[in-house]
Length: 460
Image (tube, rainbow, N blue to C red; front, side, top):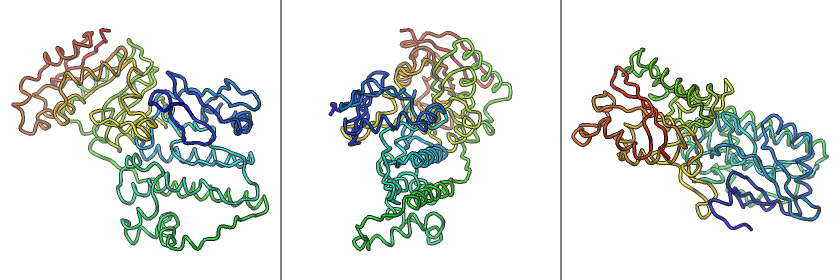
């Protein structure tokens, strides 16, 4: 097995093969006993149509001599994310894709053996299936889909916990194989326990758990057409349950920020937008990171200027709105529920299976937007301005658009919480001195509310 390091290996748990990332290349080794079947799937019309439609990762065969290991190279999805960084809508979209893929496998006489959300990445606002080893030939007389339980644990139960218990979807970070029914059942109200699909996916399995030892181990055999019908019905049922667990539309203070931001006049908002539009038209960045993106107003400007955009925000409702707007307009925007002050850590065996947020981001963007976010880092998270400048330089290879909020600003004073004396020395000169270690000032725009927009260019 390839040595496991955060720079060389992304996954090693599949007995059929392993995946490694080397620079910008995503390489997969398939063990020789699985190689022929993997090639058969990749050459199928279903696989080709899914690749053409952008729903399955494109794959190139590097080496595949009969009787030897198979070497594949996959296209690299620009910014990989994990389920614990997704919005509820992204979870459901990834679940739909997984069930679509499972259904298509049945038409090939195959079955999806692995139904985890970790098989899905997002290319902009659209999900793409990336694990070509998660499919295998199906026993045509077997009506059971072994990955059914995994789909319930890793898709349905996290969504149920979010909708009915308010548990953050980010908790999936410490539940690699999802939740067990018994983890949810004690916390659900009596009424919730009998809702669809809670009764069939949580209540009934939990109540039958004590009788687990009485189950027959005899394998069920059915006529092939009946077995196929049973599996198809199971997928149809899961699709219904998935949509019933979609949470109702919700709002937060931040998801309504654009409507309630009374510290901007109409003119200020227009001037801010014009400044950012002009920068994007001039700089023409290919990849933009929007930190503190809120509902994505400026992410959409960047996308319409031709950039691929990744949007980070801590607010789930705002990020969900951002994703829905991007998906509706087919914009290349990937919202990520993330906190730049407390970034997602590396996880898994030897901290190498899932890379940290910052490791995935460093050097990947030629423009970073930080609009209306620095005062939160300074005052709420108490990050020194020099550290903010350093991190900004690590995340962009060329441009940064930064909004400075002065100490006189109403939002600055609110966040100070009577600690104004601690930040009395923070002003535009301190900001420029700190950022000048990494950046050159290109242009500046003063708004009537005292906020200042800066275009900065990395000086090395």
